[in-house]
Length: 407
Ligand SMILES: *[C@@H]1O[C@H](CO)[C@@H](O)[C@H](O)[C@H]1NC(C)=O
Ligand SMILES: *[C@@H]1O[C@H](CO)[C@@H](O)[C@H](O)[C@H]1NC(C)=O
Ligand SMILES: *[C@@H]1O[C@H](CO)[C@@H](O)[C@H](O)[C@H]1NC(C)=O
Ligand SMILES: *[C@@H]1O[C@H](CO)[C@@H](O)[C@H](O)[C@H]1NC(C)=O
Image (cartoon, rainbow, N blue to C red; front, side, top):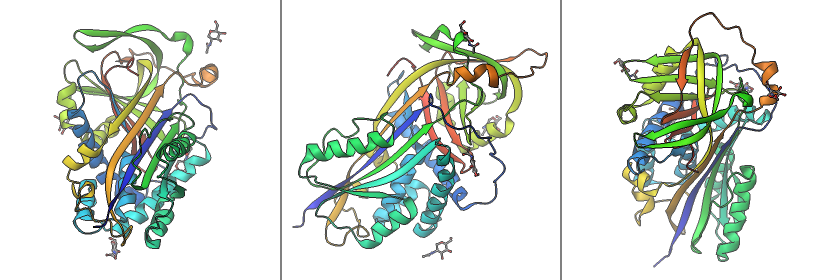
């Protein structure tokens, strides 16, 4: 009997926002044509919310959630180029690509990486794929060609027989790609590993309107009715895109980064978090985005750094991707000699939010404020965050901040 080799998906995601980069103007609507990568936007958003709901159902109350929907979709799409038969059908259906074929998906990702490459020039966003390959294992040329061409994958060889060294090598690679934000992604590696697919998303943004560190002070954050924690609360009054959605019981605020990226904050009314997260879908994001209007807003937001570590195996299986993990897995497009299955899919994400570039604050934050009562957006209870990349219409990151002090 032939041995079945394992492959693993690692998704390393770092989001840090206290570094400097060249400032550019946000021109999010300038290039809004019907672009190839936009075909991925609706299915990827549906997948993001389905995954959120699944992860949320496994997450204890009071715990944070943070992941990169774009990272997960990308890694799975890269893997799907080598999947065949029912394994492929399930992957495409889970990803929401059933109405597309693999070559259309590949082309859309080529375009997406090309678009994101533009923002790489200003060092905002780094999304990449890699394949750590077993030394004596040769995948089909067509698989290598596809992932190099469409997913810009970087391929390197690793000696999985020396499990510890292999893990260290992969960890070093991920650490380098995430600027040291994610250091110990791989803890143990099976010696039967044929390959490890790695996706990383690294984003460092600078608020278009930084907070002034002098206004940051201790404040309370209410994790739930019985739990409150002390946080450093940043404060800023400014002109922001804001929307109070009475019908859906939430306030929505858009905090733009320099570049093509914004943070959308969704703050459900007291006691309404569950109601909101149970129904939230891409239509809400669109509705909110379209309903935002420029207002004076008093913003209070905790400063925090969290890290999320998730095994995605169970979630992906529950979402319909069962074959890939089992003995019926068909990765005939990766190898016709060796049987392969996915042994694990893990995802790690870190997020830090601070005032960012406060030294520039005085110069860049002078705004003409109309004489009206400002709206208030006080983030002192659990809220949802979305990091949206406008040029590709991607959800780079999403999550729920239930407790900003929980590392
Ligand atoms: C895949 O879909 C594209 C666009 O939908 C179509 O042009 C192409 O012919 C299809 N390719 C295959 C192999 O079916
Ligand atoms: C924003 O996206 C456009 C493409 O839509 C790109 O040309 C531009 O360089 C991007 N700007 C930044 C700062 O990344
Ligand atoms: C913050 O306070 C320090 C010390 O009082 C002052 O030098 C600095 O200019 C202030 N920063 C801003 C952005 O106002
Ligand atoms: C929000 O509330 C309105 C009014 O109840 C409803 O029509 C809409 O479907 C809800 N969801 C979205 C996507 O805005």
